[in-house]
Image (cartoon, rainbow over the protein chains, first blue to last red):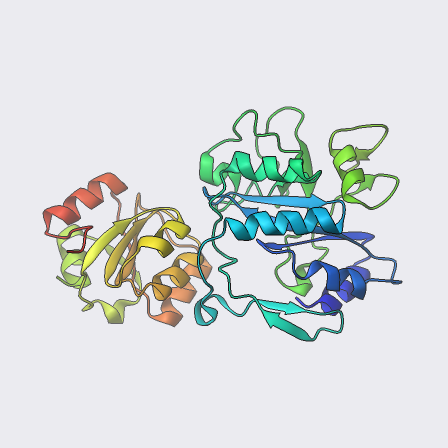
Length: 216
Length: 115
């Protein structure tokens, strides 16, 4: 999953926009965005944040400063060091797929933030909070808590299978690949009716605001 | 006591890592949050959990746990089985729920606290 491979795969699969949401990290977003320049593929910057209950939440952010602030909050609340032999190397790359550095934090771990704090942080930074892979038996809000607590305030829920689990009325459903390998990119997608391929527009579509909508 | 002793005493089923059943079990830890086990698991602990996904094997290797026992008759996912086999991590299954299984392990002399 290098910036060039991600962009190449996204274009080959005919995607207009991708959101790059690494576990507890936004460090590869800028390079991916630069790798996508002039290719017609838009890149939304995000982070898949793990709450202390090990619920994964996708945060999509509108700009660099918001994304950086989110990254800071995550790192301030993330415990543990990576063990590359067990969990693999955590590489930060540039837009030429050159390794810039290794991230030594335990990105596969959980932050000490509660689910409410994770969603609250994303919203405070003007981002979009989507419950990740809610139909998976691990690391999803439903697998970890059994249900979506009322009042958490998700903007949407990501579903990975063809079936739709029972979700609160009115909660928008999106499908995405959750790709962990380039070949998985584009395996699932969502069609949005929006003015521009940005996090803000997607947020509006999830809430059916001003004509923006989720089409599929 | 060894994993083999526990397998026999409690009727545990062995799904992987069968060649490592003579491993000495030094204690036990029960948790379903991987971050919790990463923080508190000790080498030689038997990990009692309902999590079936392959990340449990990575955690067991990382913390040098004696092995993993899944509760409520839950079977490991295919990826988990494969990874446990490849890494030689003992993977056991019990039909009992966590509370009962832990109680019986304590009854056999296992402790969750290292002195």
